Length: 347
Length: 174
Image (cartoon, helix red, strand yellow):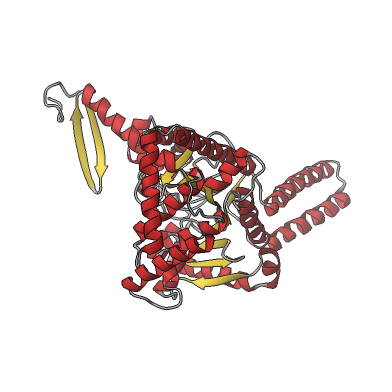
């Protein structure tokens, strides 16, 4: 049985939002921002925060968070953190004097000494910005009790980059937009959104081109709006985009429909019979399997869309090497098995 | 001078751009200049994040009607030693104090990349207390001044002790 929904709008959103994320940028008063800190200051802040993370009072408020010193973590561990978005490419590339705290089944991460002293991130699967915000806010408030933040009544939280001032809040949703991805309207939409204070970009690959038809939509404006407004407006904007995408799909010509269906069946064949798959191939397959479900084609369809969202992470190189350092051939094989088993489980 | 691009029309627009460490000067006719700005605008519209927009603004402030000149490059924050030049290059402030030191230069940039005006979101709990405490102390100080004027020194001393307690608590909190 496919998932049951209360109304069409919710159904479309739940089908299209892959994940939600909220990030809060915070700095500790009394230090320069990380870009202008000297070695002693970086070390001092790191030690102070590590000690803090062990304190009972803090742990009671923030929950159990694991401290990972990135300067001593091995490459595989770091790659895994990167693929899960728990750390940024910036932290991955320059791990010295940097750390990350994670917890709540990896639904929370606190990057230390990134562009700001603290980058608190809350994650949630599917359409759940509020859930992601609550997770991040909880840890933020735990820090707030024991640290003095750099804060200004007019400019709000003081951040390294002026684009994060005010709330320091950047919210983003990953959207599956298969119709818009191949439509000339995409450029128009991106520009319109940019003018309205949002950023839409491809999740895989460069710029607005998106192989997996998954896009990241996030707010640009952080000052002069409240946290609740940012979240509510982003939700509205996401809902509009999703509606546009479904409308475009409904307008496909028979020829366009054939092209898509043909592509889906090809992917289905690959998913079922391939002995090895590259990441690029796997991305295309997940896109097509998702689309098949949306088009309600007469074929084995994914039943658990929320579970399927995890595949995005699990098919990446470091995830496929979790138990052991495996070579490329082994990864190709493992990826093919992962996709095939997910599909078979649903057949 | 002829336009560097079409080499046909007279160059009336002169653009100086930083390309890495090099200064690139372009002399363009109005037609080519408009095309150039159009392209720039597109690039900005498709910028991946707000910080990219910010960097574009800081690289070419005049194009956005922002003046980042008049010795701003040489100005230095007394706390973190960051100069205006560094801010313009990185797009990042050096420390909280920079926002005060470079207020004149940064405010127009903030107005461009942000919506408007003042913070209207969450205020940290500790901050609320500090603000409240500061207000209380100010009121008590006024009271002391009045009492001293009326030569009621004993009462003034009581209030002075109250302020001391408040201030000591503040130090503990930090």
